[in-house]
Length: 91
Ligand code: SF4
Image (cartoon, rainbow, N blue to C red; front, side, top):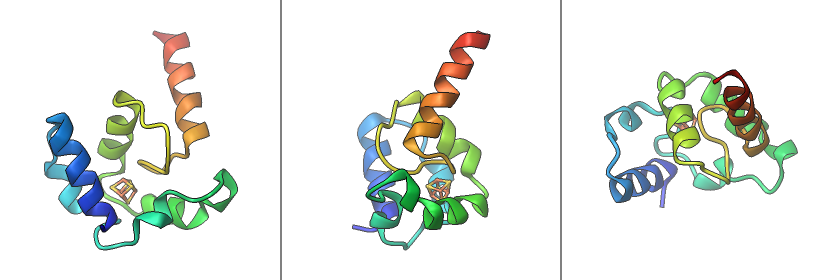
């Protein structure tokens, strides 16, 4: 399953607006790129996300749905946890 198909399946299952995913720079790429074995191996995914026009939508989705694994919206698991903590402090 391609990464874009994986995202589509996840979103449909959660009944979330999925229109932005069609524009993801990860369309057609191997999902394993976005689920590296370690944070340190995330460079390829992060560089793809950096050029993605729907990065913000993807990141907000991942934060809202508490995605625990993989790179979403240009952020690793550790970075997403940091963003969530930061938002809680400023809320
Ligand atoms: S930000 Fe990254 S993971 Fe999200 S849609 Fe774009 S390329 Fe895919």
